[in-house]
Structure formats: C-alpha cells, structure tokens
Image (cartoon, one colour):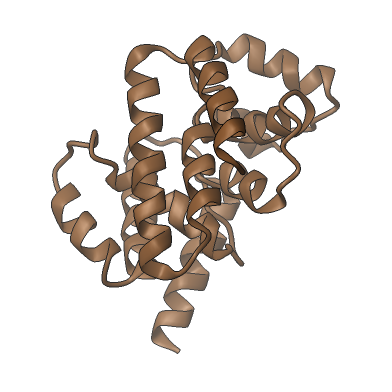
Length: 192
C-alpha cells in the first residue's frame, strides 16, 4: 500500500474510531512496521494492516450482526458467542468490499488478529503480536512480552494466545477453535 492509500485509510478510521482506539491503531501500525523490519516482512503492508486492523472495533454489535447478515457471512456457534472477534471478521470483509483493499496479506492479517489460526503467515504473526505490545498497551507482563517479541515472534504469539485463552477460560467464555489450533501448532512446532 502506498502513502496515498494510507492517508485515505487514516481519514476513514478517524470517522469510525473513538480517539483511544485511533491512538491504539496508530501505535499498532508503528509497532507492526518495526516488527516487520526485524523479521523481514513487508514493512508497508505491516503498517497498513496495523492502521486498519480495528476499523470496525467501535461499531455496535447490533450493526456488526446486520453487516454479517447483509453480506451473507455465516457465523459458527462459537463465533456468534465471541463478540470480541466480530470486528476482525467484519473488518477484513469491509476492507475488501468497501475500501477496495485487494492485498490478501493485509486482509488475512486483519481477519486473524484476534483469534490467530494454524498456518499463520509472517504478516499475520507480526500484526497479532504488534496488537499485544504496541506503545499504548499497559498491562502486567507487557514489558516481558515486548522483549520476547524481538527474540522470537512465535514465543510472543504463544504467550499472547496463552493470555487470551486463560482469560476466556477464567470468565467461562468460549474459546475460538482457531485460537486452539494456533496454540497447538505453536506448541507442537516448538517441541518438535
């Protein structure tokens, strides 16, 4: 994506996101670009994916459900119960349909930034981790996660998935099957 398109995208997210979420998106874009440089991924794509990853995060649940229905997007039982993932699913589709983003790498990274999945691309992993460690993040363990991210992207992903899965289990919320698959793949490959 070129600078011109990113300027257009910035105007679009300014219309759709509250100030805190806009600040977060800008930070994720910067962090994704840094991680991409460190690991040899496309820096421009990483920046664009970071900028756009939460484009529908502030959209009310009722509107996201209408979006799915209007566009023929069928949710699994787990997806229907996992509201925190809706913005990523709808967001990737919205980018394709409404903003005419055709880059499959960017669309994939946005789609999987909440749940992860088995077989993630390097850009998918970069965005997934950047979302956890962006400069605006402040949670117990974030510094350790930031350090880990620049040593092993996969180890950082594993920690992020453990954090997410533990939080879901502790709250008796469903765990998306793709998160389990991503976790299992990382653990198996690590031990292998």
